[in-house]
Image (cartoon, rainbow, N blue to C red; front, side, top):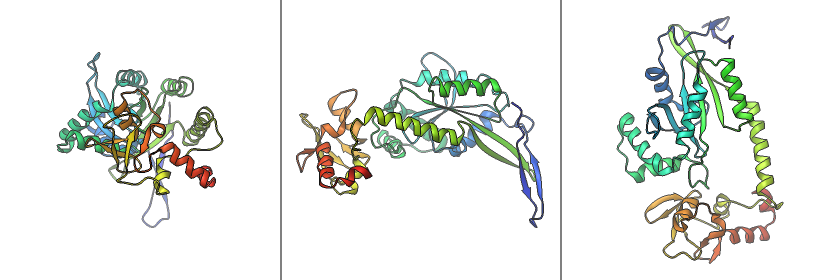
Length: 322
C-alpha cells in the first residue's frame, strides 16, 4: 500500500515549514528484534495504548518452535499478541499472529506470573516473588471483576506499512470474525540526523473504534440488563461507604472462606491478593460466579447484592448514576 506520509519541521524563527519525507527502516538498517522490539518493550504506548509486557521472544508453545515477538496484557486483563515487521509489505504477519493467539488462548493468569517473573529478571534485573509478580499484574488490570484470562487474545500488528492484502484480511477478521485486531504504522523520519518515530493506528480508525465499542456496549446491555435499573458495582459501594478497606467477606455456605477487603478491586484471602471474582472461584471451585450473589458482608450479614439493592431503594437516583 503506497503511502504519502510526511511531517513538517518548523524553522527556528517560525517563518517556514520544511517538509520531511518518511524514511525507510530497511535503508536505515533498523531491525525488528534489535531495534523496533526494544523500543516498544521500553515504551509500549507506541502501540497506541497502555500495555504490561509479560514476555519477549515468547517460545513456550507446546506444538511449535516459533517465537512470539511480544506477549503483553492490556488494562482489561486481555492477553495481547504483538507481532512486529519492519518492511512495508509485512507479509504473513496476520497469519503468524492468529496462530500465536490460538496457541496461547488456553493460558491462565498463573502461567503469566512465571513468564512475567522471568521477563523482569532477564530485562530489568528485578527478582520478583510469585506474590509480587501477581500483585504487579493485578494492579495493572483495571477491571474490578477480573478473575481469569479470556480465551480470545487480542492482536496488535506493528510495521512501517501494510499491504492491501494485509489490511483487507485484518478488516475482515475485525468485522466478520470479531477478532480484536489492530494495525499500527510505525513511521520513521530523519530530522537533523535524528531518528523520529511517528506511530499511527490505522485499523481500526479511532472514530470507527469508538463507534464499534458503543455498539458492542449497547448489545451487551441488551443481553445482560433485563431490568431498567443499572446495578451499582463494588466501586460505588466504596464511594457510598457501604464497603470499605478492612471489612470482611465470606462466601455463602463455604467454611474458611473469609477474605479481607483491600480496595474496590482486591481482597486478601489466605495471604494472597486477588480480585473478588478470583477469590470466589478459588473458594467454590466453580468455573464462573456472580460475586454479588455469593459474597456476604460479615458485619451486616447481607450479600453484596442485597446491600446495593437496599441502597437503591433508599435512594433511587443512585441506580441512574451507577
